[in-house]
Length: 60
Image (tube, rainbow, N blue to C red):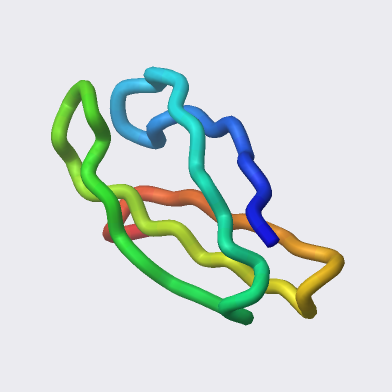
């Protein structure tokens, strides 16, 4: 089950969109911003139906 979530880069403020795979359970991963290339940390918590996504700078 895939969901998408809009977000803003915690460094430069540019908008982005994360594609979330809820079937994989809780996940933590890092992706670079497409504009400023700085690392963004994503933390997904899900039970497969309900979910919450936290997005922050790498050192926050």
